[in-house]
Image: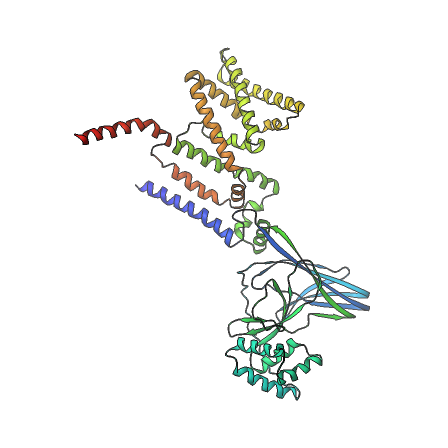
Length: 519
């Protein structure tokens, strides 16, 4: 009882560990579980240009940070003749290009790749900074005070206050206070700056943010100014043109705060433009890159860290447990006889290279010819080892002859005969020959047919794209398969094919019970 409990506990641990690691890689690391998932990666290029004046030049561009629902995958810079450094200015990343001397038009490039990934929330302390309510020149200060009083009466919290405030300026016919304040916009003050100042006058934390709408194929796209309002727990985004709250769909925040987007020293006519393009990439490759960047131990110490040549070998090796499980089920539960315990798995491995129908034809032809040669050798009273060696040589000769003949006839499928394991074929021929002599051809056909049936089933499973993806992307599932194999090893019940053999006995017992009940 103690041994069975230990085995049961081991089986449970193996199955749970395999499934748990698989689910972790899927949900935490983003590996696709089923199908060839495709993810959209956005590439944004910032093109900084200015005219240098023949002296030292320096350009500083605000860089985006990690943010909610977005994962930055890669960054790159292109700046011939310039040195590049990254600095942190009050919590905002900036790229600084510098050179000793520059003359004429200068072009600098920054490129970022990102992926929209809902659910990501970087752990950053994004609390509002202290601010001082501005004082506007008259008559704007009086109009602002009156407008703030109106908005306060019509709102209940910072979010509704901001929404009501913005709607005052976007109305078809603004009231006299809003109309007066719009005069500041005509004088050069931007609407987002005006709204932030009014919110600060209402003692509400607010700031300007700049971002881009992600649209494929956009060139020379200008950056968009938005407003963020702090509601006491988090920042809420507002569109100053519509007053709509919430993050727009496919919108990437480039900068938070009212600091300049671009600063240039030693140059004039500076400008920055943005181009956007999207591309589809396999989710597995993307997840692998992200996990490597994050330093996930499950990836660092895994098959993915091996050379590509070794990884390709493991793509096939990791399919073998699927064939093993198929053989165990067919032998232990179904009760099918095979020639050799795991010989069907090796045949299925050969089928992966030859395809099913050509593989069956080649295998049956080789075994049939081999059996005929083996029957001739058995009449010469040879020793077992010598006879087996002769069969191996004959099998090689047959394989070479089939390849040459098929090539001359233009049948390229037969060239894959070399993928069949020669030693296993020779030993299979030897076993079938002995079985023919001892039990007769009927048992030979039973074992041979059973082997081909199990090999065909194994091939169909091993060649399934979903199975191939699961075994290679989630080798942890081998632990689960090991647990199932251990569980099958404890099966002591009737095999399905034995039910047919015992059916007459069950029928006779039922007949006897029926007669007794009639009496």
